[in-house]
Image 1 (tube, rainbow, N blue to C red):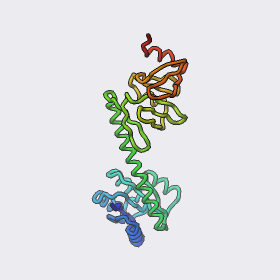
Image 2: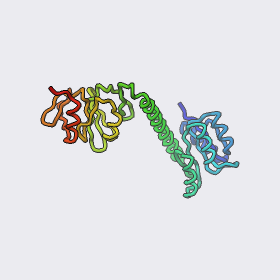
Image 3: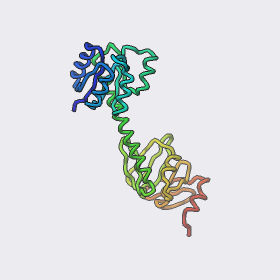
Image 4: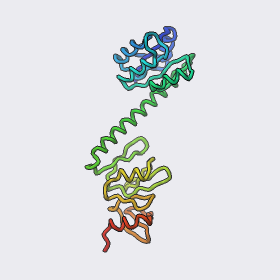
Length: 249
């Protein structure tokens, strides 16, 4: 499916050259404009996938201001076209949070690179936003949740709390060990401990959190959990807390 692009450029020759270049690259130029008001109107009408916007255009507003107005109404990436690479221009342009710049004079490869990078960056931003919204929703209902979600690469994996055996610190990461698999995530033990609010989970070492229901044996300050041969140490400052949580005959 072709990507729809809105082009705003007040020099007709340059505008037609951009349109020709985009069509050659396989994109669909859904509309073109030479001023900010028209660009905003066309963006609302056509809802493009990306806006290619010259910074200096006709009319009362700059391309930066037009881009800002467009982004108020729709979440699309904006790539600025400019013949000015001075610090003042770029500083102003940053306020519109563009996804890229193309400096004039440009080549076909410059347009393709900027457009593809902008689309990729925007798609990743949408993924993160969707994930954040999802996790926020889960957090709002965590009191009743018997499951947690562990991020594995770009996928969220559903894990029943009863299947989570222990969590192990590993430098800047933690490893979540479940009955079926181990997941390495970028987090801290403090953050994991905060999120594992269920009383079945207990910190037994600065590098380990275990599921009390999964403990199989204890010996000489070490424990084993079901299905795992590895012995997990119990830190000296955590022994009393662990002892208070188990029934001993």
